[in-house]
Length: 85
Image 1 (cartoon, rainbow, N blue to C red):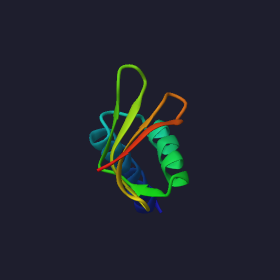
Image 2: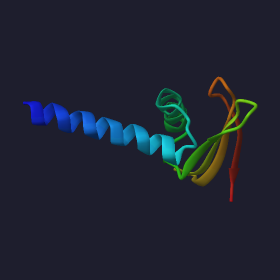
Image 3: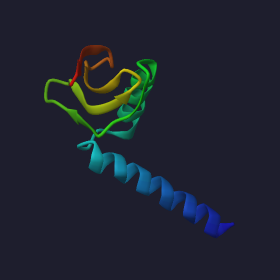
């Protein structure tokens, strides 16, 4: 039982630190909201997330049904820009 709990805690910490490293220290709660917005757009993955000083989130190389996109969200997680390349 203790090993199971320890493993669960270790996995949770690893997942949290993975978000922080890959997403320029965007808190996990914000990443969750961003991912919810992305899923409504038909996107299921991305290369990285950057939070600009102005509060704008930039999602790089989002894997969407329409193709690979760069997406910007405002501080309320509303889409303000989608660019396909």
